[in-house]
Image 1 (cartoon, helix red, strand yellow):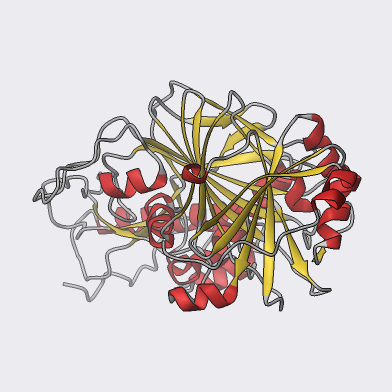
Image 2 (tube, one colour):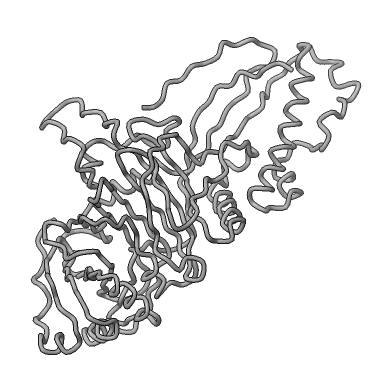
Length: 449
């Protein structure tokens, strides 16, 4: 069999997850009885030593004119440790690390080509804090306001509490609807000595600032704990949640220590028609892997040094973008420098994806940074056969190899997604044979030049 020389081009398609909203790692507490759901989260964790910068992106579904978010934090945060980020940077990071399709086109099997070489592609003012609260009542509930700040469109409170019942009562008395089951989870964080970060959004102030969406909240802190609180976010979860963690470190890949970190299947050839249906394919494939691992695994989607990519779904983040996410070890480019400084070699990105619920993920995620800098990407391959005419001696062998490839592509897609293989074959079209060794009709080449 002749070796096929392939030329490649990248096709990246954004994943369109069906869930309507993104959320923080905490739970939403809505004023009034409005019902809120949190369906997915995107969290960036920049980590070096005990230093962590956490960026939490969110959207929400529901009808409240104001709402708040409650997130456990390991310490009382100063005003300078809280920041409002740029959603566009998170979207860039998401695009850069997203699962992708790569497509290749078979050359004319009757011609000889030299291998093609390709190089890698390269906050404003806000209203004053809420009205003064009854400090005597706070003391009776065991709740203490450790600090209060205004950051962009967010009013921030840092709370400590002696018991979960008092904290829950305080939230209720201050006009928030606390989801059922929150008290037990709040108590577990209190026993760890954690504080509570409450970010209240003033939608009127948000509108005045000119934003039609909620910008990401960022917090910087020092703690020996390299973890992400999941359990509080399940208190008002409407079914299993999707979480995307983007970990940026100096030395290598990040993995979970209390749950298995599993690499997704990658590099497999799949049928051409998936190009127009990649989001549905990826959701089905991911669901199959979740079930295969008994819903108890965290999945690796991407691991790469941020200074380059191959193939690139989007350009690597610039040094300025990385610094905006909290990579404090990245030097700021000189003012007015042209061109911008390249991304340093000491930024490694790990993208993790987990579908979680209270039954299968009873613990928060605990991470560790490894020294593993091997590259990984959830990458899937489309191979387009040669469509032209040909009459060379090798054309029959080439057609046979294409039929064999199509058989394997259909089987692979069925295995990855659980889809019916007969339906896959119908969508592939172009006639079908399970037997790549079936001979061509005797007349097939008779009148071809």
